[in-house]
Image (cartoon, rainbow, N blue to C red; front, top):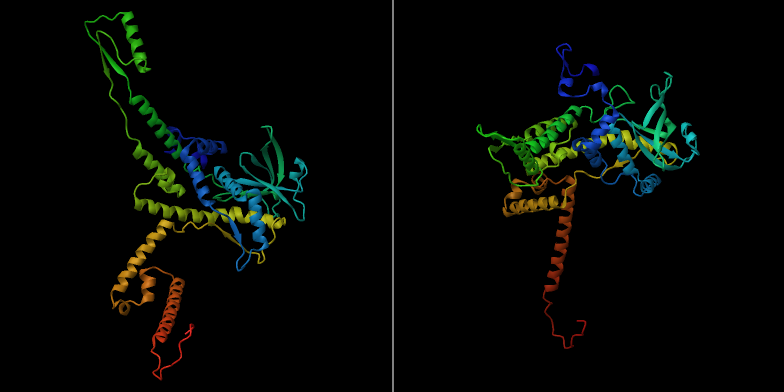
Length: 451
């Protein structure tokens, strides 16, 4: 199927070849990595979703617990000690460049490089480090061939090429029990996913053509050169010709700002520069349509408050979905399961926990102030009319017009009733102090200081 991509008219025309695209079956990890390292949009396609996904703290919380549990405390300590979140973010990035990424668990039962190829020893283990690797340096050496095994068709042994302290590298074979294997958007295979740049690779090449061609067009078209027209009656000698050429070279290299010649009319050629903007917008829209990343997030531009707000909302929903469908089920929970299995983390009390991400939809301080201002204005308009409560009861006004939740309405009502009760009690006390003393025979005794 890959060899037939781009073929038309029963194989007579190869569109990919005509447009300069590489055949789909020839794209390798090195091609995607080169694009990621050298092209801005390719890097943005991979980096920006990853950064947005892993921003903020990453907490594990056991439900229905009022105090921090041993599981929660152990996870928090592990995150502080080895920087778990930052490493998992790197793993996510490496996974997107190729078809898979792996996370190596450095456990205390390995005493030499040869020890990595052995299964993890049973018992309580200590986690020394974790290292992420991409597909290019973590190749699959051996697959499980036993069809009766639950791991049939999955990796048994990996071959990892790691860098050493002297700037060189060494190769170690690693048993799968020490590896967390992560894929993104797999199809039939559980071992290999889909590189995030594969579907947009042709568009990335188009971007290079347009942006690079635009720069070259400006470089050549902004100063296109001169056209020389020799007078028919003028006889140009070789010396005059060489002198004129020397002057033109000096002019082009900014060594002189004027030309002296005779018998030749020099005329600057017209500039030929076109606006590449519409072509760039079309390609960015194609990339956005495939990746789900809004165009303005890719390009980092802001064009209008309404459009920006819509893009922001769509982007937050995209990131939230990515957390729920990829980061949590494919990375965080499998990693935690390995840690619990090797007793690096204590098991959750109820064998369940919640991955607590930062709230993407929380309001900014400016937004809170603006909402409070609008609600105060609506409340003032509501209280101006004495008939408002007969038409729309206060609770309905709070819920429908102010957008408050039932819990918020209950809280407000309780605080209001408490305030009215205190005010009523205060008024009774004041009234009792202001009542006149009963009329009776005048006292002849002088009032004391307390009286």
